[in-house]
Image (cartoon, rainbow, N blue to C red; front, side, top):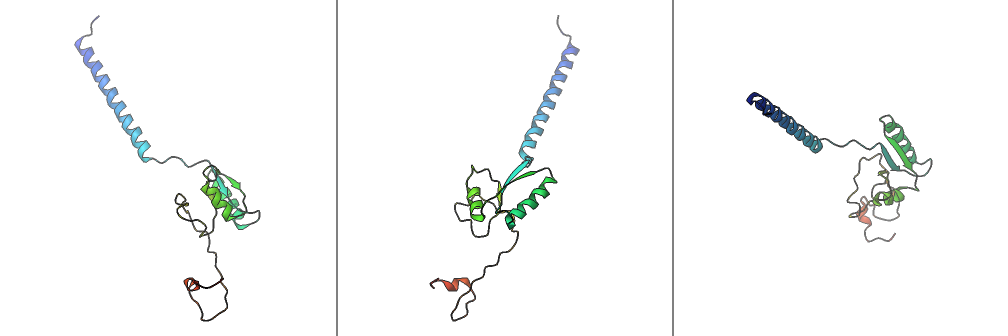
Length: 145
């Protein structure tokens, strides 16, 4: 049985419409993959500090704040900033975020680390005896400890 001419024209129009809709859907999907960001993780592992310490308390505060937004925080207690730094450098540790003191991270080993925020200023006190009165740290260069 052969198709009549109007039926063939109708089939061609349908095929053309499906092709246009399919191409538009592909373009929309590619644009979505290109420009939309992936969802944040549902669980974050954070390296904190000793029980009762400031880093531990901050980790608990972040855990409760992020829980309000559906993010679960797994706290990994450590002995402090040096351990946290080592965990961040070790890609197999599973730690996503950690608390560090300024100046611990060194280049180039820390090139892949990104600082998110500064939480507070930690003062540095230096006591010495001697003359003259020094006003800058670099004035200690060449002196003995």
